[in-house]
Image (cartoon, rainbow, N blue to C red; front, side, top):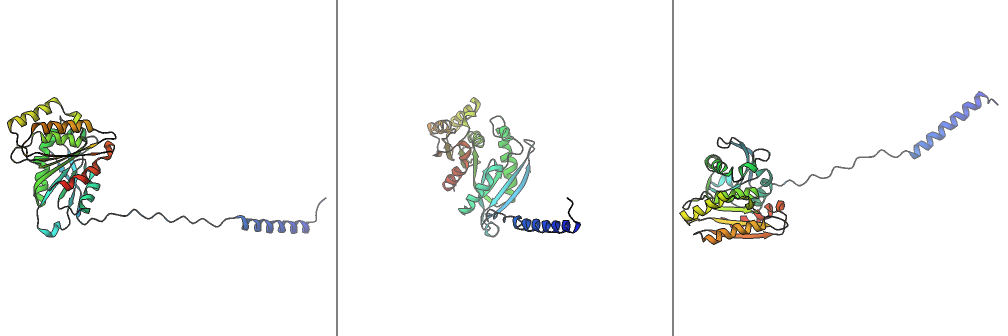
Length: 271
């Protein structure tokens, strides 16, 4: 049966009105995006930070970025400050600089990056350490100490392979005026020391038993290089070096986690 056109029009109008009503009640209000989380608090230094300095080494053929922390009041004090040279600056600068700043430690921090992917495995290892030692003494330190107001003593900081480098440097230190007066070596990879390195240290001791240096060691025990660090400590203690002071602290931490708490402990032990 065919409905009259007027009736069809009426029925269609009613249907559209009903659908509109249902649609209005079922459609949710537009979603408002939640506010973004507040940004992480930015640390405000009392001292001054100078990032991304560069030193190009003719000795190693590598350009090394480094970062500088200057203590509070450096610009106006006119004072000279001891310098801390830390390896692996690509990882350590942020935490080390903040710790110095929070303690108002009157020292300059120079954090040297490794200078390229895995370059630390060359420069910090026994084979590359002699050239890198020359770079530190003949190129980086003169550049830093000509630009900033510095004074002795110098401090060397290394973790893992960086501490291995420190062990090589220590075995060649001058008996009367050491280049680094403090060695902060954290869970050192001393297992990589070669027979040549051990021989060099023995020859150094035989030539002159004087070593006016503070050697600060830490171990990581969960797991880490604890046995190698304690053997390294025992070898130096057995020599009875004149002027050598050794302190060690053990941390129940994994190897990769030991650098920061080690530095936090050690910086209170140096001048």
